[in-house]
Length: 248
View 1 (cartoon, one colour):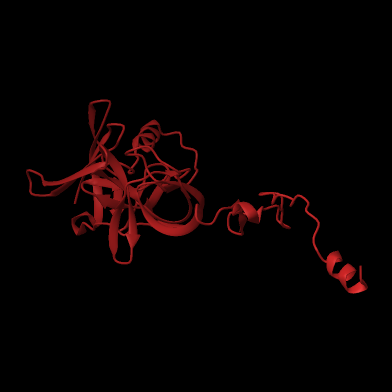
View 2: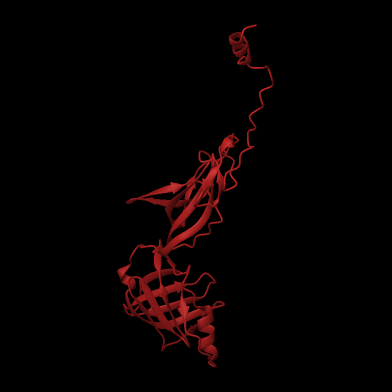
């Protein structure tokens, strides 16, 4: 055999098994496995499949409304520009307070082969980015200084004077023993005021302590009417059932 023939033969590959490609056998510097579709998500700080998991920022109102999906339910309301849209899914870990607007970062995980009538995406809260009082309905009839005329606690009515409720279009203050003040919004005829503040003075006056314990504007309903002597009356009924009647 000539040298040329020998050189040609030496180039012929020898049959041998081709090693299999190990899916998932590669790991990058973050611990993710690119061959299985995982890559690092810097927001979630974990390995995800980008087509299955993503994040987005949404603005959502704390007040839910009645809606109908598969069945009657309560829906969140999501702001998109100047419009408000119903959000039919729940957001795991998110417990909004009525009267506030939230800017939140949410995680969206697609559900593979979801059952019929089940959501195709699961939503969960990553973190709250911002929170502010919602600009709500204004009732200019509430604005002014109201003088306490009477109160009803445990169905017992009492006449009383010497206490005043001062109301602006979005805030109020009242003093029994301590000064209580806060912001409020209105939903229908319900006052929403989840973040009231109060001074912390000790008080030995039992009546003041009782009134102070009974007063809570958050969730209270109110009505405006005219008294027999044509004074404007404001009746505030708290969630616990106590009623305060003011005039001006």
